[in-house]
Length: 260
Image (cartoon, rainbow, N blue to C red; front, side):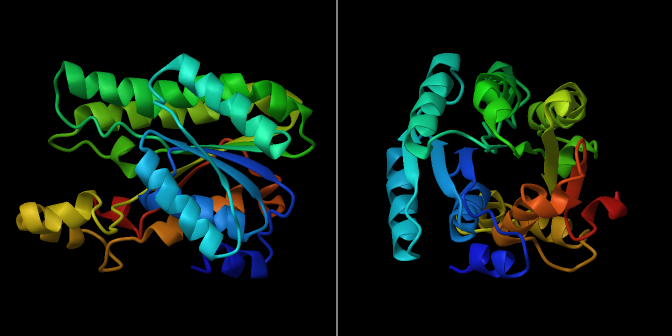
């Protein structure tokens, strides 16, 4: 996979940067991790499943950019802290924090709300707070949160997920203002509907074809997005090319939100 190398060739190099990625064993997070490693960064990835992390480590090794992995449940403060300590030790510090973990809390019940609030929102809040000493010690620090266009569009179903992402988008702007005094940039990406093997839309293509094709019809570009396209945006926002950008939530959605 040459995602990171391609982006690096266009100037979004992250050579020497130390990057901690929360939620990076599959899908968007996996592509971001491989892209950052391919762009020259030292990378630590945390996720819940050891099997996915092992597969990611093999893929990184195959592309010649080994990375550090750590298995933890990001719904808990203690395990987030343990990962960040481990990551900072392995990398020699932290310059970039990417908050990508999601609990996919779709059901409007106690479990759905708990999953979204604890992982999509509070894991990002906790990781950002706990990483602050290392970020403040960096000469070029930034935080990138992964929100969603679901935060901008009311729709039936997935209320917990959408509400948590809306809170994360607002937290991004508040955090950017609070951390500007330390020259720490904070931005977010709001992906549209992204399709990848065994991902949400890949499963819905089989399980709920009406929803799949109905959503596809609302994307002006006429296709679902790819994880690599989110990784490209992440590389830009965390690179020196975006050194004057903070407090921004970037839609990467092929114009999907334009269709309402």
